[in-house]
Image 1 (cartoon, rainbow, N blue to C red):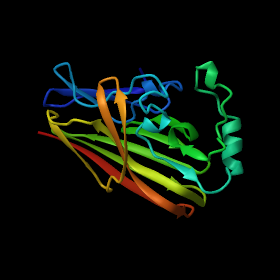
Image 2 (image 1 turned 180 degrees about the horizontal axis):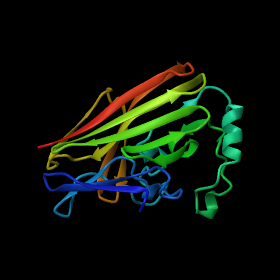
Image 3 (image 1 turned 30 degrees about the horizontal axis):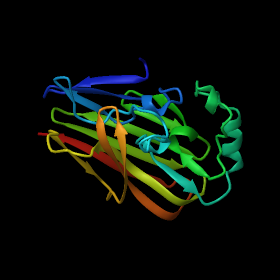
Image 4 (image 1 turned 90 degrees about the vertical axis):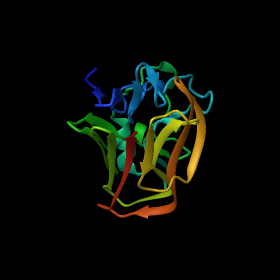
Length: 220
């Protein structure tokens, strides 16, 4: 329970978020953005379902990810070699943490720690921070990515958010700081859902360069 943070707003909306990795390698137990409910009614997708079915892959977890345009940096390979495995599922124990397709998932490539206001993730290439600000009628999520080395991506997806496919009866609006230009559908344990993000193509980042973006939930 130490990796979970529960909250209740003044409008009878309650929920929780969880530090990445708290699912011990099972994506159905990950929840790095707030899960919301009111009067026992689900107000947001809750991850849960069979992996590799209904578009359920590690990409569905609302954290940044991208595809490297270069070989895996030696620093990251050494870092991954000595990391303690978090995946308790034996069938994944021997899967390489540096896959040949050069998919760089923040969920898999960073070590995470809980903080007073959210969580941080760290690896030799990237420092990542997510902070949650709770108000009477809003939740403000602030993300910051700091590049610790020069790095190139064929594409990088930031500002990820998940929502119900049908939002007719949802008592809140979601606003992101970046245009959401990529999406896919998936089935969550609380209903049909949509994953959105902002995709950047052929990008290069210098050491110490930063990216910041936000997600704001405003309740009616």
